[in-house]
Image (tube, rainbow, N blue to C red):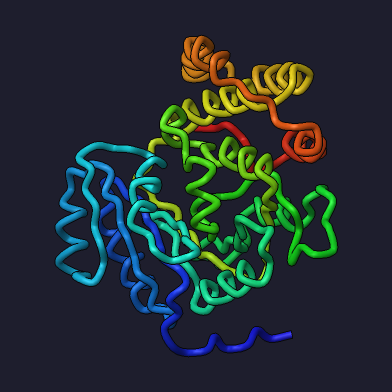
Length: 306
């Protein structure tokens, strides 16, 4: 069935929050697309300490966009900073190399408005320039979690920040993204806390985000942070059996090189604060998380490479 054309006109329910670091050209391209959306959302950019003139270029090209310059690279915590200024009930996240398809923000707001137990809705991710589904999409579509009748889509155990609309108040109440994790798989910890608070996380096929991966990235740093953060999240929120299973699987399957070794050592160095802040999820949440373990073990999209 063909998708209907999105209705025209401003939708005041959603603010877009975008974080960026030293990707001026990608940022300007994405802002051009976001400011042309029929929903005309307010857009807040957090420039995470760029040295390439990103903040000034964005402000000059798009004076209607709010540009925040914390003066340092806050990683995902830059989103927390932006949320202080959000006054809309829903917040759409994206990165400087992702953008929302026209009509999707309105549809996400409709979905969240009509499903008050849902805190996050994650969109289908289309990889450009080819227009193909991101490998993670099939995992989202076929999530093994039980789906109560009242949910509008498959239930998830986490979300993808660059392709998700969140309920603003739920995000704030859960504390936002952890400064400890900085960036790289930071969503899992927040997702666990949202589920613990009674919220549902869902996937919606009809919402679409486009992703044209930037060439300006450090895959080795991303791998190292991802390994460390996966271990910290697991040790912080999962019960002992799951801690042992996931830790052992990660150590067995990551590349056995200096980058991985240093990432593990950084994780171990954080054990004193991890043990102090550890708070395992309740049993009903752990049941859902355990159902995802097989998908995580066999995933083509969740690999630590680079």
